[in-house]
Image 1 (cartoon, rainbow, N blue to C red):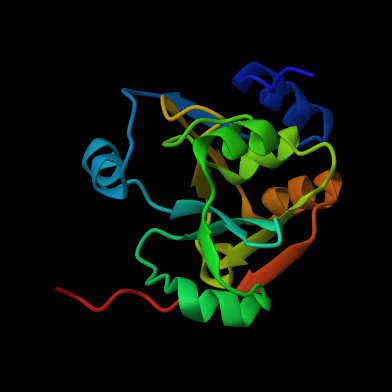
Image 2: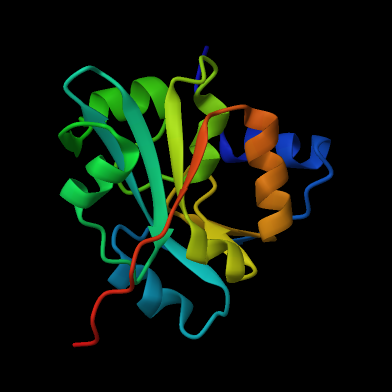
Length: 169
């Protein structure tokens, strides 16, 4: 089955009565590029990591953009053993997106519910939430309550994690 498109995602959100607003822009690949493009747009902005362990277990981690993510500590928290970044081929196979477009909305493509989703608890307190809609050429805003509804509808295992903010430079 081909990976969902942004339009497929929007139809899915509509079918769940989830309000969403999308802004199209130049592609962004890093948090710094995203910050420069959006300016002072309020809400929760994230960084997203696709991780795996040696046993083949996979995680999608969505953390606040200012989070200090330590993979060793995260592995202990998740009981995952040693974590590493998943290869682009694995990312495309399970989540249907390319590097630079990793997003929790990609769970729409995980029909086998094989990915465990780890969400930074701080994001739930930063409305609205902003995520790529399966492409890094756009950003979609959604309320934390509607994002929770999306996650429930997908059926993946969800783990809340608290990442500390990075120390100020």
